[in-house]
Each structure stands twice: as C-alpha cells, then as structure tokens.
Image (cartoon, rainbow, N blue to C red; front, side):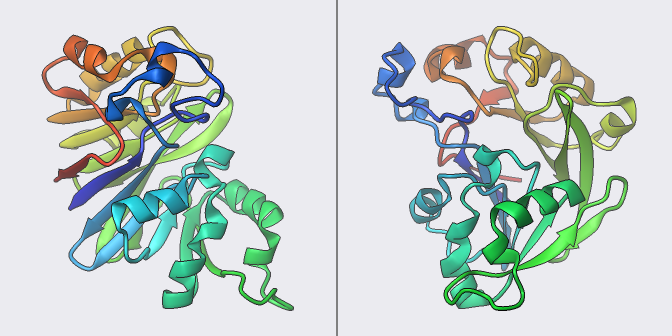
Length: 254
C-alpha cells in the first residue's frame, strides 16, 4: 500500500496569505504546505482521505488518475471544500462513493446540495454515493477493511481511519482508551502536531509525542502543521529517530 501526502498544512496553508513570517518566506519546498489530505492506493484501488480547497491542485500534482472513494474525517472547510472538484472523476467513473459520519453527510448535503440532489439535477454537476460511517463498525473499501477511530477535535467528534497496519488521525486533541486499543499494532501512524505551544483543539508536539509513545508504531509522520511550528529542517532535527515531519508530495510504502 502506498500513501501519498497531498497536503500537510493547517487550515490556512503555508505560506499564509499576506504573512511575512519567516516560514512563509522559506525557499525550502517542504515548508510550503497545502491543506491536509492523503491519497492511499494499492493494486487497482485509489482512495483519498479528505477533500480540501486545494484538491484540484493536489490531484494534478500527484497525477492521480482515479478516485474510488473519499473518506471524510469531519466537516471543516479545510477538509471538505474541494468536493466540487471531483467532477472530472465523476465524468469518467460515475457516482463517487463518500464515507463520513451522519453529521458530516448532513453538513455536506446543505453546502453542496447540487451534488447530493437526485432529482432535477443541474447538468454537469457531479454525484456521490453516500456511505454513513458508524463508530465501532468497520467497512470495506476495495478489498481492505477500514476501522474508524473516534477522536475529539476540541468538542467536535472526528473520525480517524485504520487500514491494515496504517492509521491516519488528524485534528485530534483527545482520544479515549477504547479507541487507543484499536490502534495497537499499527506499523505506520500519521497524526497531527500543529505547533510547539498548546492549542485548544489540536495536539501540539509534546502531546503528539506522548501519544506516539502509547501507540508505539514503527514509524510516525506528523501532519496538519502550522507555519508557527517552525522550519521543516529545524524541526526534523529535534524529533525521535522513528518520528518524521511529513511534507507535501512525500510518498511512503507500507
């Protein structure tokens, strides 16, 4: 299974519009981060987790040729605002399956009513196949079982996803012992680490590292990174040997 990091930035992306912060002025391409998302593929299967406002650019850069489905973590715009750009995939493939919590599906139906509308549909609008994700209930994508991981983003419920030995968690602030048990044995973990300073709704670096110590994966990649975290090259030097800072267009094999 291959995991391609489509975006590793926080909600504003890096560089931030109008910012003179040194990280936003960096010449290191690893410091330029689109909104957070990953593309997961194996054999003939191709799935994306989240579909933010940079989705079109990410699909072109990664040369993704098909999307068999989109798994949504939650409804915030930096994870969902690119949904309209599934149109080229819809024109080639038909209805695109989407997987999300009921609350998220209801939110998307309001915001993208023309996509979810089944009657009197606007010509040229894409269509989706709706799949509700329930906590505690695994589901299939292709021939692989997905285990939803229920976490909290401040006061908002968010789903992470485990597929085989890989787990993807973003926008996490707290997670229960029961959900942690579902992550035991993963070889590769992706988890958010927004910045050094504490944040109300996201892991900071210390919280992410403590969480990694509990899970004990072979490798961990940090994502959903803010410009105020610092320069990629400098942060990498401070991390444990099995923890890495993800960056846009990084591809790993599991």
